[in-house]
Image (cartoon, rainbow, N blue to C red; front, top):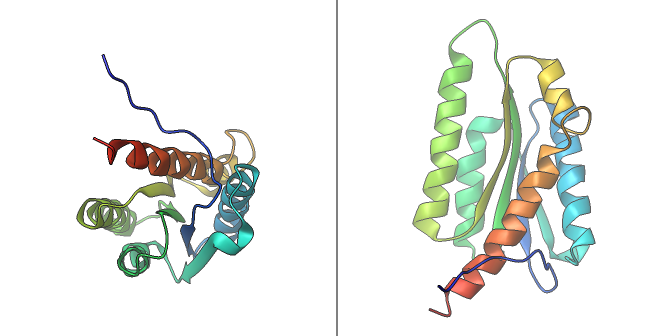
Length: 156
């Protein structure tokens, strides 16, 4: 049985990071975790492109534009949507998730989902470096693995 697995080597790879400014206290920690992880894996800081958008709803458009420029090997989307008193959360979270998936599938490019969708600020803080680790780091690891796996699968 032939098995394919992506590694976590980052040398000579380029990444785009699309980061929401909304809930910036959280998203900056996600970004720091992602950058630290990529650099530790061998990605040069000059090979990182950070695109800042106003909120989560705008992430898919920026990711699509970045993907179509064909200057990066993968994109990491980072954001934080916190549930409020209205259905707004549901619309944004759903559109954001669908949009990111659409970019990945249509552009045939690894796009990592590092967007927190939480019930409150405490849950968000616990997922950007406190109690449950840093989901920005996890998204960066996912992007690294998928880039390397994609390269392996192209050999088929």
